[in-house]
Length: 329
Ligand code: FES
Ligand code: FE
Image 1 (cartoon, rainbow, N blue to C red):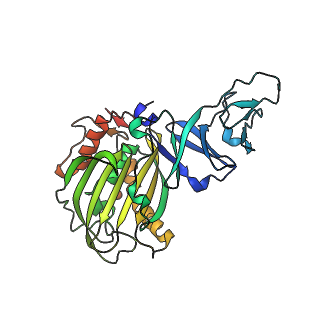
Image 2: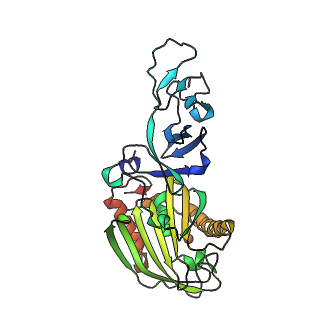
């Protein structure tokens, strides 16, 4: 397993999907994860696999903060230790379920399968989430048969707007991408990574509430190998930040979570979600068609031009982060 991703945080569910006393199964990095919330409201993330015969614990039951396996009824307490074996009540209790690190941030459950590193002790930064002047809209999740790095790279790409999002984020009469600046950054707000700034695009309909085209300034930040935040600065009053968080299921399949933070308190919540759905569903067939599915980091494997420099900076960042999962080295 790739230590970079194994020791980092990944989103696996919305917090609201896991009520107190309830369980939920999730998949992450080819690992079955059991999420459950105890009576006190704390979230737990375990391997969703009984240490007795490998059954999915999420098919069992949860009562009084005790998870019971559906197969032979073994009971497991809060720390994942076996507390009862019905078929042999006096047997020594040495079975232990693998327990993962769990957190809740941005209304979502996050899991680290390994050990969080000092640099990534917490889930990625999304500073706009704390801004009460911005409304939060949870979009997706979107299940895509593509590697997470291909999905992040597509999110950073502006040259496809005129083709894939024609009439919404782009205009086929204006396909040129003006030059922009790419730099590495390190700051207290976003942590560290690479960013592209002074990115300009003419957009016929930049957001759900836009009434007509406008020139938008974009800033893209890659804050973790599979996390990116876009901020839009249209000329009007709408401020918007869009965070894309990836839940890598396998090297070539990904569940994508998007949270928008924007100062539009007028539009309907569902309409804003639907706008994002429309955009994402336009990207999906492109992403699923890309070959190879894993993102090639080898120089010369794909042909790039000047306006691909953010994507090249992202690939260089992944190399520097020593990512191996979902990429070709
Ligand atoms: Fe879980 Fe036997 S497989 S109790
Ligand atoms: Fe797109």
